[in-house]
Length: 295
Figure 1 (tube, rainbow, N blue to C red):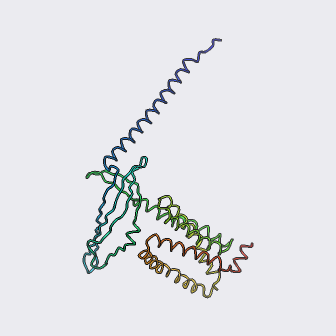
Figure 2: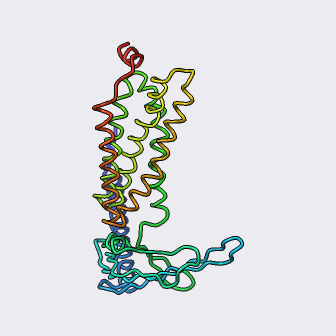
Figure 3: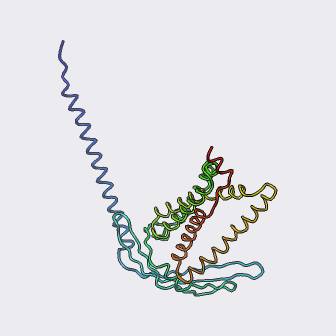
């Protein structure tokens, strides 16, 4: 039999491999050039450096029977634009905030503590181009804010389907106490780490804690209430619970005016943690819950 020669076939395969390697290298070079061109274009639009930023916010409200009510405010900030790798970052420090045109029906007051709470924040800068030219946005954006807002109720709503039956097996006290602790941790994480991933995690922890507490508290009320007056007991419980929304809003608003926004959030977290400690020390497990847990 005649021996086959594989050398031309092997050379053909090597040529294809070289072509693929060269194509991949060319693609990488092209992407790198595009990134450099994009960075250079952004630097031309908004060169790195220090800027004075003045913003005027105006609003018009239509009040039935009273007509229009206009208000306007002006803020002055020191802005530093710098590049962090491929991203353009804006450090925003509020220096002054004042009311220009007050409303007829609502008087706007911005205490010094409120201005101090604005202090300094850092945002990624996003560039957009429309028919009028280039625009840039330096904030989280409505989309990211919506995601943070949605994480809390989604986690809470999904997990309470699990935590409700779990409280029938392991008891009410542990879930309520630890749920308040987890909530406090999520609130503190939100105020201590001013970063988007930390805010997502903080919202998730608050959702987990609420899921542990919310159905379990209702179950704990029914454990202690006889069926003949159970609805009345739930009404009293909800009265004091919902009253907390109003009292908490007034308390946190007063603390924010006197000390600052960050301090108000710290107070909320501390009260939540204190509630968990009180439950752990003083709450008694009902007899029926112990029996279920033991089984």
